[in-house]
Structure formats: structure tokens, C-alpha cells
Image 1 (cartoon, one colour):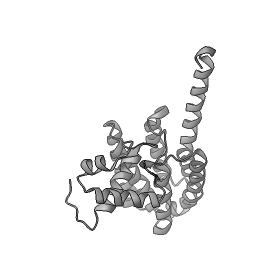
Image 2 (cartoon, helix red, strand yellow):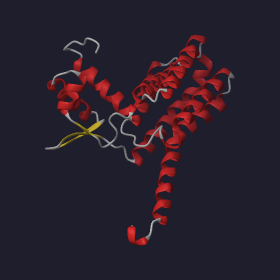
Image 3 (cartoon, one colour):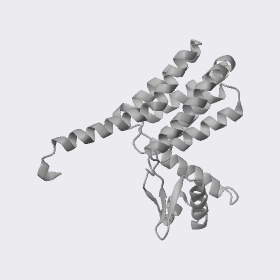
Image 4 (tube, helix red, strand yellow):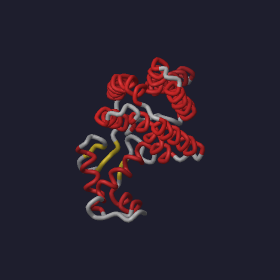
Length: 229
């Protein structure tokens, strides 16, 4: 593990836990046991407790009295509101991205896409989370506005924590990769309409996955004999 100092241990652990949540190590509704976390990350229980308390204050996880800390499960309504907020901001960024994109910025986005693809091939959930963040951060940076990019990044990372079914369902990884490529192709072609369309499809894909899962569950329930329901 990289050497870390006492002044940044709590912040470091918070980031590791966020990556673990986004990458599937700690899915929604899973319990975060202090002893296990201290052993896994090589830090003290004091550091673990500090990180968990801070994350609970931010609403990333929840504290259940007399039981401990649990990864929060976003409701469908909350995820829908986050998606709407992202759509408003990210699609509004498109004109700035088109006007201010640079060869260096596009190269960074292509590199992040390549890294994400390699992580997907290795089935490394946490690496996928890191490289996916890097890709979307690189896109937001093309707009040349740190304030707006910061808002986009914050909203995206909120939506990925405790999100429930994600990439593994319904070919999610392949679809994400294809949509990432569509975004870059639209940028290269100076086609803002195509970019906005790709962003919309990308941000709303989880809703289609959720509907597909619900439909599958309903079909199974209908096929189940009455005496087994």
C-alpha cells in the first residue's frame, strides 16, 4: 500500500470506499464492518470510524443505531432526479465542449476510454469505476469551465454510489463502451446534436436496465405455479 500520513488517512480511506462502492466491492445495502475494513486497508479503527462518520454525514452511507454502517441504496425516484440534473448540465455543456475542445483534451479522453476497455476485459470492477470516472472527467474538462465540470463530476459520482444493478446487467459494459465511442466521434465530427443524443442515451440507460429486470421478474412470477408463489 502507498505510504500515507496521519493527516490524510481518513480522506484516503473515504476515496477507497467510494471506489469500492462504484466498482461493486461494497454493493447497496451491504454492511461496512469496522474490523474488516481496518484489516483490509491496513489502517486503525479510529481512521475507519472517522471515514464512515464523514461518509454518513454526506449521505453516501447510512448509520443504523446499534448495528453499524450500511451502503445506502438510492431509490428509483432519487436516481431519476439525479439523472435529470445531469442531463440538464451535461447537455448544456455541449456548445462549450465543441468550441473549446483541444487535441490534448481529446487525447486524454481517448486514453481514458482505452483504459476503461482494458479494465472491462479484465473484469476489474474497481478499475472500471476509476477509468470510467477518468473518461467522464476528461469529457467535462473539454468545456474549459472548472465550476461546471466540478458539478458534473459530483452529480455523476453521487449517482454511482449504491446504484444497484449496473454494468453487468443487459450488456451494460459493451453498451457503455459503444456510447463512449459515440461521444468522441460526435466531438471529432463537430456534431453537437449527435453528442447530446449520445449523452442522453448514456445517462438514461440504467432506466432501461431497471425496466428489463422488472419485466423479467414479472414474467417469472407469471410462469410460477400458483401453489409456489
